[in-house]
Length: 415
Image 1: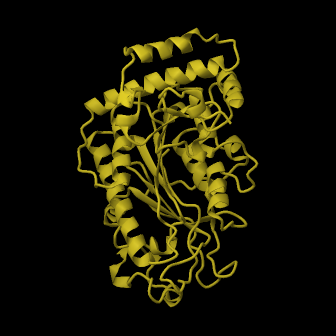
Image 2: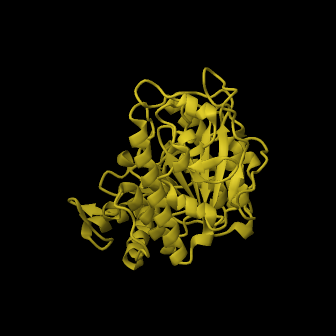
Image 3: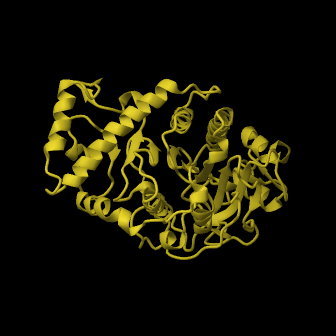
């Protein structure tokens, strides 16, 4: 593997490659001709923000089967009191700390997808995350499901921020040999540096570095790779700095790292950086112990961050362009454990949030009376149906090739 650290050691830690240099070189050279005209022009400008709830979010205490006796019998101490649940429909409701998302539901801007999972659930964090990130339970498809989607979008739109990750390295779902993905944790640290301090392209050492790239023969090994990567680095750092200069949030974001990351995504969107896919992670959902307190706090962090993000986009006139989708590698077991928590489970729930969402409940609820695999909820909605809906229904890219099969869409986004 050729990492970005190996490849730009002088301090342009900007572009997360996430694949071998040879594959990236081949993909970058050959891509445009292979995928010309692959997208639906009507979806141009639409943006997907993927929110990973890392660790395995407890779907039962996120979207609560409020009146279920089986739920309350299995969770003597962890069941959310029925009077505290924020009602949705069909006897289901939201965790009481999701008041902002409840308002979005009331406004028709929140879709809840129930029973989401895949065949032969794997209970390892790493294996299950790999399955979700690849969009393939058999792990036979190359790269990440959003990486493959970005390859199609790249044929119609070439921008350094086509994909944008909040973090320090490229998440596996965004990996692709054809598109460089900027990964940013702090805009102040994103750019050229000399002796640890920001430097622009006119600084002597920076100019020397750029000349080295320019003089490297394009026909030589990795020549195209080096040229395109440094171009993306220069363009994206300058564009982000300009967006930061012009952007003023219209709301106060919560003082959490999740809130700060969402504010950065809003900055990129409002600043016109032509993001098509953004990614952010909220961790801590592996609640084997002390779940009532820990999960409640996470619900509040999620709710406050997403509520501020949606309000900011609405105030800047960009809300119609953005769809937020949450995911987690699995849910939790139905029964609580002896430590006041829950262990690794199977199916869970996903949220789709946005001004052009068709609000409501989607997917059949899994049965609490007919558990599977030693006490787990069976899945009723294959996660690839959700992916097909956002790939084709929102981003306008045909999904069959990207997911290896044709999947029925769920219809929670406007066409």
